[in-house]
Amino acid sequence: MDWEGFECSYEPEPNTGCWLWVRSRDGKGYGRLRFGGKSSKAHRVSYEHTYGSIPSGMVIDHKCRVPMCVNPSHLRI
Image (cartoon, one colour):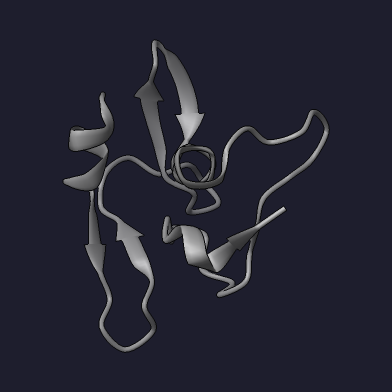
């Protein structure tokens, strides 16, 4: 999948501002995809596309507490 495909894979939720992943999800509700030739979590792809690489050993937190959200403004290291 490329970035254009990524952008077609979520739906904005108007009341919360979340971007809800509508494709494959794991057992905990996190979006999953193949991006750049590897299996990735959708929220990490969104964060890296917007803010740059995630330092080794760090995780991405959903400020909104919605695992399927990929809105980069709802994500933080």
